[in-house]
Image 1 (cartoon, rainbow, N blue to C red):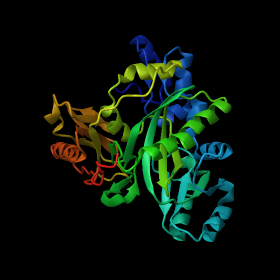
Image 2: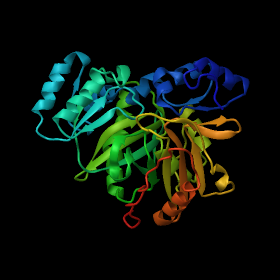
Image 3: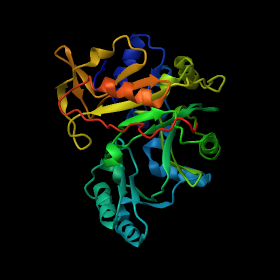
Length: 387
């Protein structure tokens, strides 16, 4: 149900929660967190799962996060920060680099599209222009990080935090590029799978010990009370994990591959985090594999098509191992229609990845809308024998 103008209408959300006796609000999008929705709802006496404004800066400003992690010696890629008044210096910095690709990051929120991997000097300067000159990302590109490109493999760790304790969840792997083979532009995410066999238990523990737990301690030392999801994008190179980015909410689509495998009741965990007392750990996980495929609308990620009727959604009624997660959808004349770039995610559970992939792609083939696009290689290289 859409309330008012959406997640930016704090007053209406609070009024709705009070009138309907809502016991817990779980904040999904990043922008309202950065704008202080958790602060506002808590001021109205409404229990809220999600970090307050100061804590949400971990996602709201990549420069803030970089400064924090540098201060506490938490591993991040090398690089430099440039203000919008330092455009010429940023160009000179790019021209001095002798190793490409280079990563250009807009400081603020950019709907998952503010990180550009530039293959050469020309692409890097064009990315810089998009941020600082053309303002493609609005004010989010006024500050830019120019960062070393690390080679290796990426994974995602979602953690529950009550401000005092961190409980890590199982790993997920996501797919950012729009096309198969990691080709095309970056998106908010086109698919995911969990668990991640390529990540050994020793690497997982090393990521927790060198990145996740030290970040939690750093936040405490900075008097930042972090309650909610702490989502880490990790890159492993030569056996060493580095932090690429933090998100302050459930990752999309990583969550759609992780939570179906969670055996514990999620609601008490969320309430515990919001109240500052999460309870015992660790969490219990199904041995099943889960993959999520995202279906996007025509033109995504540059544009999105709205109002296209979606068919086939009733094909999975009563299924326990096929779940459809709506995202960019709306009700339209008694039907469900597209209403954004990433339209929906479809998750499938099975004892093995091969079976999970078959279930997911067979199910996705039953869904249709004009211009529908999705990747065909989600979890195609997941290995079942290395976990």
